[in-house]
Length: 207
Image (cartoon, rainbow, N blue to C red; front, side, top):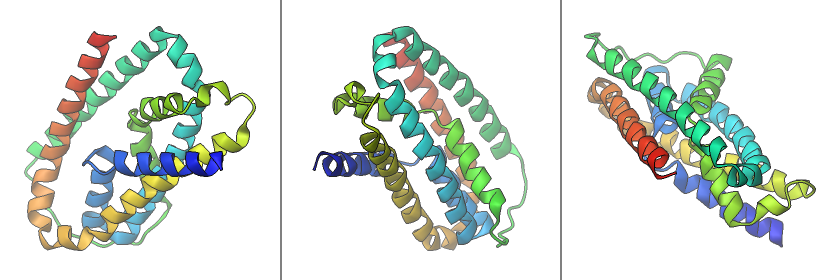
């Protein structure tokens, strides 16, 4: 009963956490536009694999992180550096005057690796799942209750994949306006990185 409750809470928390436009879901949408739905699905699958690992790490580190504020600071600093690099990358890419060509390429393992890489660069799921684990008092059971850990991690991955799958299904609407989407998506991603930089700075200041 407790495992079912844990699974459902974590699933919907992960589902809602990926609904707002972000690095991973916008990458899935862009991949659908540029390389087709199958590649977009593979990117989503790759991202879900990493989320599974991130959720597992989050549960294992929950108690340690809560007990050591210095670790939280280091995680935020690492995130600040990564978001700054991504902001420069997307901004420079958006400034390039390159004509967009829509192509549908054969889906392959490279798309899975792309999804995994993007998910690795996104550090927010770890503190997000740490907070969820702490709220459900998992930090007191992670050392021995492996069924709870597996349930938590699996729910996080499935919830994330469900939302990303919905992004893939909405590809048809994006495809109708492929030119405008391709034109402004990089600017959107650069703006998103700037917002994440400010949020990280605020969190660092409030520690």
